[in-house]
Length: 488
Image (cartoon, one colour):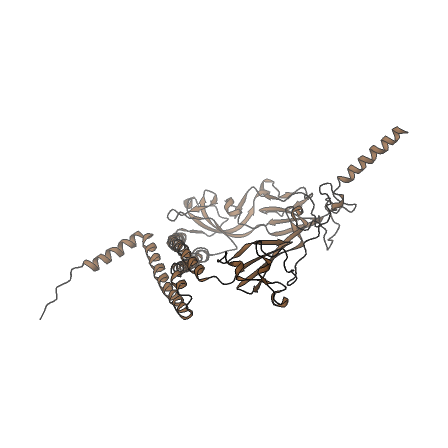
């Protein structure tokens, strides 16, 4: 009798352990109640969102150290149920920004700041801003100077590409050894040549085979999971005595989304949203052709193959969490469902620019600008169009954008340097506004002159031959002997 009881007890324990190791229910879907990987903690109710106007007087939201006696009663409708602090509470905090420390309750942080700074604080901060102004000017000089050199190097590259490129009319024709080492432009069919040696791109685990001539086959494995999204809502309330109350509330929402990595739900604010601990249906992988050729002749390097997108959809299948495939598209998905997407980079017509190296096309380095070229574009494109769209136009736009950015930094820097002059007379309404306007106009003109001067010096520095010619011309004009004028 005792012996039988022991066996029944042992079988019960084994049954309990086996049940605890299962991550899915009878339908094969993720069920956290069956999982041994995650305990089911007591549900935590998220912190209540505090509606505007419901914060009680004298609550924990009053900054530490602020005495209740210093609060003045005001109508609840005016400031949302708060009583405003008086100026005495800010005597030790003359500057702007947060007074005291942030008080936190639930997901809301409340702080107080002074709306208007005192005259002494404004003057003091303006002198501190002088250092910021010098830093901005230094950054401006650096950007403007470097930009001119970069523009020149890119322009040299564009000119060399336009002059040195040899256009190969037929990619399928035998390669010309006389062009070895030169920059070539070739248009032709790019395809994987693995089938010629019996190679097939396939994913044997899922029984998917890429079409002949494909360059790459990609398997993307994603699981349907909960995702936490946090946003911060900020609300400011003007209180008496030039004080502003700032409320920052963190709000969390939860969305269902496909993800190729496990989202750790243990870090969620709301613990009732749980994700499976792992993806059980395979892993994302990429299968690449061992050889990719242009026109069946030129072997192209990895720097070109990496630019060809693998984005043609081939097959998509959805599985339960335990790996059992759905018989048909379920329409709606459950947490833990896994989908396996197969995409392929198919053969097609491409235009490639690079260095011919024997029977291969590899990356080309311009000896003059030290910049590299490994360009591949979809379809057929002429040399003139490539030079304009890929080299000259981007270089022109980038150079002018950086020139404008450098000018703005110069202007802001000069304005900060002259800030104390405005702050000192700011207490006089008309005079302060007039001085501020004159400061802005004067610094704008000065920034324009300094920017143009910096660009000119950089232009001459990066073009030493032109600089020598300009200097020689200036010296000639200055010291050229002039014929004496006759006096009648």
